[in-house]
Structures are given as structure tokens and as C-alpha cells.
Length: 165
Image (cartoon, rainbow, N blue to C red; front, side, top):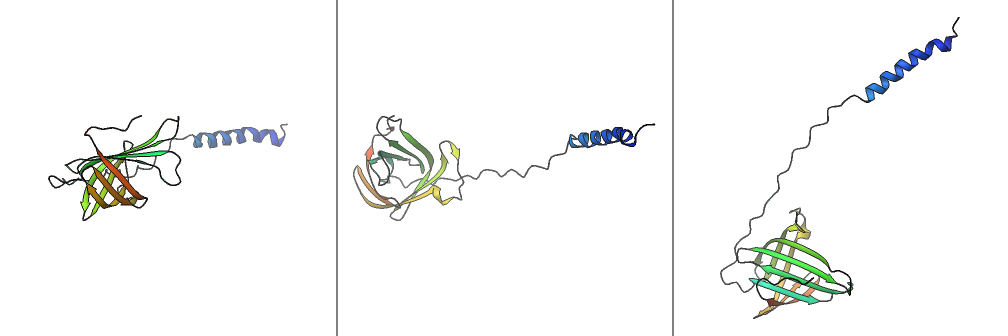
């Protein structure tokens, strides 16, 4: 005679095997969410002869930041812009930011709208990518702007100028 507990072992093993196999079954994945197409921004050409068109460099120090901050922005006649920032601290390699997008004037303000940051598209609805600067003065090769971080004094550079590394 076989004890009762021995006769249940094959039934328990079969049940466990079925449960294990059910866990390995292929489940159909949920449908992927609809892909949102990237939005684009159309840059507006600047008025012909606009004095802001050109390459501008600001070099200075900012409160709370150790090192020299170099800011280069290039305002093209077609309304596109390139913006680069570089933090230089002693013998350390410089840290940088490289953005591109559009620019335009709004009265006595310069508006920079970033569409790409370090080569990646940005969220166009995020206000951090729109910067407004009051144009304090512009005389020849000198430009003074006031932004949310204070005053930015820049000088005109030759076309094609790049930040040194």
C-alpha cells in the first residue's frame, strides 16, 4: 500500500509545471503610444542691415560661479542663431553648452529661442529655452544687454570666430 502523501506528489508536480509554463507564455505587448512628431520653429529673417546681426563675445565672471564664463552668440541675417557658453577654471578642461535656434527683436529686446541644445531637440514648450535680453546700448562693436542674470557686455567679433579650447 502507498501512503497517501506519496500519491499526491505527481499531481503536485504536474500542477507546478503547468503554473511555471503559464508564466513563460508569450504575452502580446500593449500597443505603443502614438509617436508625437517633432515640432518645428520657423525663424524669421531679420530686417536688412539690423545692427545686431553678427558674432558677439562676452567674457567675465558671474556671482556664485568659480571661473571665467565666455558667452558667444552668432545672430544670422536669416533669423537663426548659435549660442555657446564655456566655463574655464584653471587647468581643468572647459565645460560648455552649445545651442542653436532662432532670434528676433521685440521692441528694445533681443529674444533667443533655443531649438537644439548640445545637438538634441528641446521641449519647445519649456520656457527655459526662451531668453529675453533688454538692449541697454549698442554702439559700433559694443553691445550691452540686461537679462535675468544681470548685465551682459559683449563685443563684436570677426565672422567665423569660435571659442578657444
